[in-house]
Length: 242
Image (cartoon, rainbow, N blue to C red):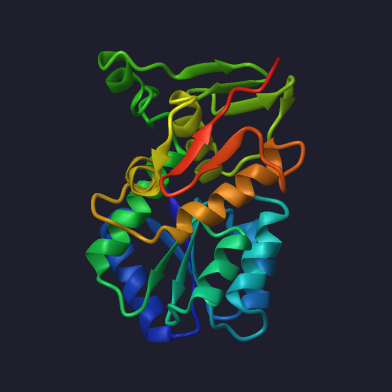
């Protein structure tokens, strides 16, 4: 049973989310203080965190930053603010996605399920949760792209044989880009393939995650040679020399 750590100082929201998520088969743990959440995290060992931005003790952005120092657990920010600076700050701190308040429960559940699909490429029954479907479509789960080698089923990515410390979201973004090496992929297509948005979403998710990905795969993130911007379209993966 997957555990979801709910960090929100609004007791009513915390109780509502616990009830809804437990009815969906999840185990939940709640916390109303940012500093306490950081302290509890190693004991709770959650599979996903729902993290409010406005918290006593430490704000959600700082909580995300501290958790990212030791863990790649999926983080979805819950924010009453949709201001660009607040959203980008949360994403840059390590959040994978954000949901503005007030939110529809069905939408939040969809986001949670999408994060689990990305974070867990192997299903509970031991079969790859997409491997068979990919094979049926003639798609591969292993990519050799010069210096970079990616295996989706093993969930490993290396550059010159050295492991890249990627979050599940960064890993999926790299895989999607590398699978279409040399081709420009629009931000809307990336939102659909990586985040699971069927309709248009917030392209800031893509832009910030590309910046985070570049910091881990590029020799010089300020002068990217592997994940390049295609002006007016999106991004493309350029295979680096082995």
